[in-house]
Length: 385
Image (tube, rainbow, N blue to C red; front, side):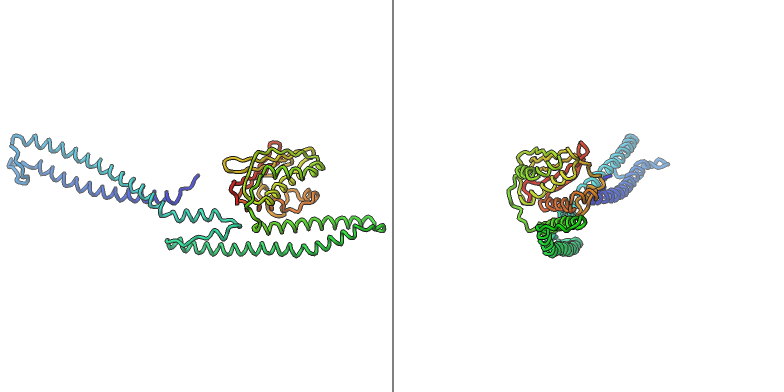
């Protein structure tokens, strides 16, 4: 059930109060008016006393032979006038209540405009635009205090996000140097022959090399994620061309996995970072290849409609359960941990995709494919930053 807005609640309460007040006032005026009308009628009816003497209370000249006719006509007129008075009073009461409700609706709408603007401002808040979401001072005392508290909260959030981003960047930088040294040592070791190594030693060297490569890729991704805000996003992007480039780059991997790549692209242009959009498409297609079934296919669609650019990547894999679809964008989350380790993923690909979508003011969702696979749908505005 849809909840009633504050504006409508104020309107209904005010209209009810106006109706009650008008009703009480109308009842009082009606009773008072009827009382005087009845008094006048009683005076007419008692014009002749029981002894047949004419009363002096009514100062009108009516012939005696016409008095009975006048009294009957007067009583009839009084009855009709009381009925008309009652009806008109009720109509006026209802009209005044409705008029008061309409006036209240527009006045309350004007008075509540700062609250709506405040709400709209809150809806626009993202981790990337905290500094642009501050609330200006308001003439309404309560809202001004709320705005001050809100701005302080934004400052604390901005500091927390900056600390988190800086920590990630620093940690990645600190890890990159020892990992690079380890890689150099491993490359030197692997470049020479070691006939004396047994099977266990060779297996250990292979495992260390693979894990070091995985850590290097993870550190690179963390660095890229921490530097998203510094990447320019004013390139004119031809999305269909980027899709074709990604499909060409991933063709060897698809052949190795026996996966068929299909591109269904129309002309689609937008503004953003061509490097980041390439990475977004690459990560989605690479994931679709890795987590697909043998002899499956990956279909990439790009098109432009109504000032929006749409990109979808569909695979024929096992799909993602509905309850896990939001969590797949969390860093290091894996739907199938054993298979992810087997494929060598670091758990940051989709998290990076979501961040790229966010900095371009886009949206991404996951749907089930017709064949049971997964569809990633991304939507951008053509004027994306």
